[in-house]
Image (cartoon, rainbow, N blue to C red; front, side, top):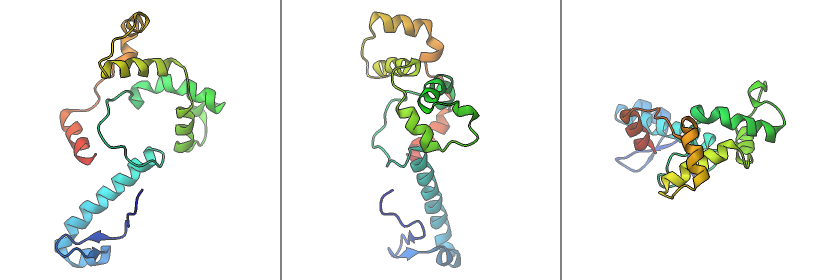
Length: 157
């Protein structure tokens, strides 16, 4: 996650580190500290969700959605894990991600391949066109966020 010090926030006025106690004793720093602490918390959550990887720069086209695609993600993940992931009493997120990265050729991979070709403006071959037409509910990503939600996410990312 880089060389961050989550216990310190830099005083925007003087460029000096400001700890929680100092920020709380000096009201003018409280709002700055709260914003920085919230940002750090969001950054750490996103780092965890990404499997401990640093943030990739640049906006990439959306090729999958967890809620929409989970029914076609779980079966190949189960094949990799050797058990039903939805019935496991405990499965660490990073273990699930490792299995997800190893799913190989499957229905989900075919769906993502078609989405990627479309996003890149590439022509679909005859079989991809037929698959996309017959499985539009799988291939077309459904909008899940309002424009306001997208703007908030874009601001954080």
